[in-house]
Image (cartoon, rainbow, N blue to C red; front, side, top):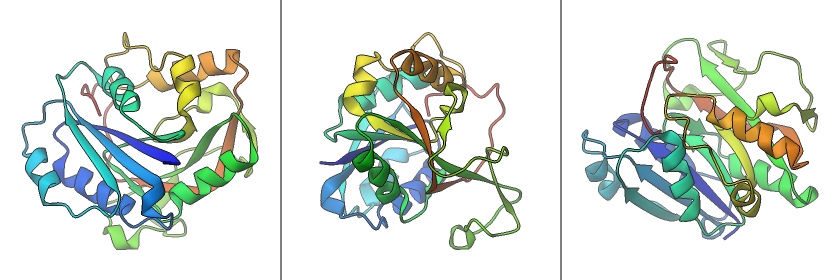
Length: 221
């Protein structure tokens, strides 16, 4: 298993379905990747939706007590089999080449964290219309950065981010004291920078944030 996709979710059945289906359509050989979904006690029949899916890759769906986003992700990583983990969310639609592009960087650099390009939607769009040149999408990171550029730890944003499983575990994962929405990823990025793990930008590793959340949003996805 080359790469494991880790997704936390809580009551996001509809967007999670779209996200999972986008990972079923990857250009990468399905035999070399898996998806691990950690459901923090959703009450919207997420489990029923999962049962009706027809994944072409290994899909491991796990329900556990809601203890916050960091705890859910840490548990998810502990259940993975891949050498590389991709951290994303239940409302991030993956470009077909997302996993391929992340793996390309890891094949060229021994121990690196990879930040991809996430696009936000200016208004609601059909999934089939999602593309970088659509007038109603815009990159989340507005600063001009070049493909392959080394980024500061403050760009460690886990909606589209990959690193070695061993590196994540060596850093003890996310700090589970972060139970609210946000900041746990940037804090981990800071600790990884102290471990001399570079953060590299991969422009072609694309996904789309299909919804927005206020900073007060508190769940485990």
